[in-house]
Length: 103
Image (cartoon, rainbow, N blue to C red; front, side, top):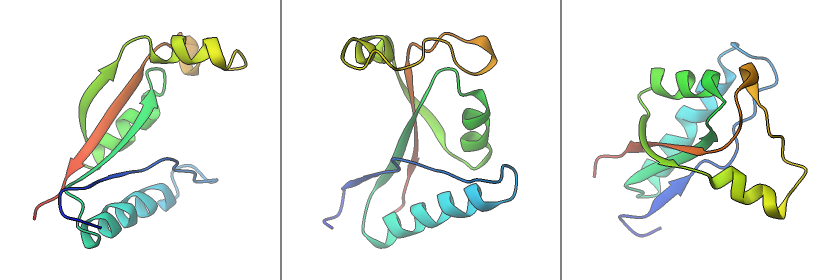
């Protein structure tokens, strides 16, 4: 992979919450991206996923972008997507987090 490339975490699934598996998987993704020469690792989650947002920030990830209305637009093509998410929050936007890697 060439220098300056970005790596995306597309899914992070840990069956047992708060067991350390999610953190280990995320750390491994960052380490593999670093070894591959990526300058940035990023991921997105929906605006209702407060637990995930807390999880990422506690591990040093920074909120870097919000895409207002992205899920409302996606719902036009995929009407099966839920409208209400965690904690009764309407699902409307994608929220992006990143880790910048040192060269």
